[in-house]
Image (tube, rainbow, N blue to C red; front, top):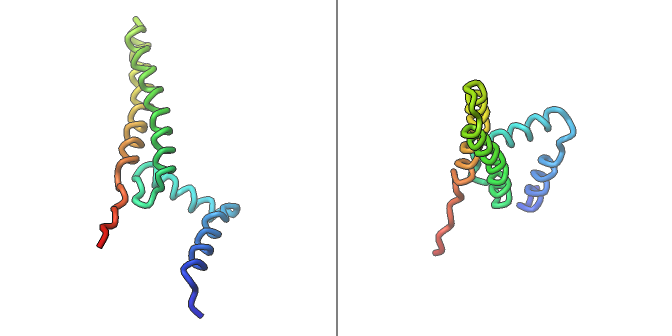
Length: 110
């Protein structure tokens, strides 16, 4: 007996929501990591907006460290602020790039 598309969607959804056993948790975590670092063509607009908010958090931390960089007078403090700014700014930029990477293709009407 062939399965209808609705049955396949239901089974796929049940598999994705079953993250209570270790292999399932590992698979779910892997897909989130892949979405954060590589982007995903199938990401929904809500996921993309969430990633943009997450990226803005990193970028706001980086901007705070840049502001503090100009207020601090010691070289040791400046070095620490540069390092912390880079550690928070680089992932923020990478996540923000992934928001716009792999935009879904629009289907042309025939």
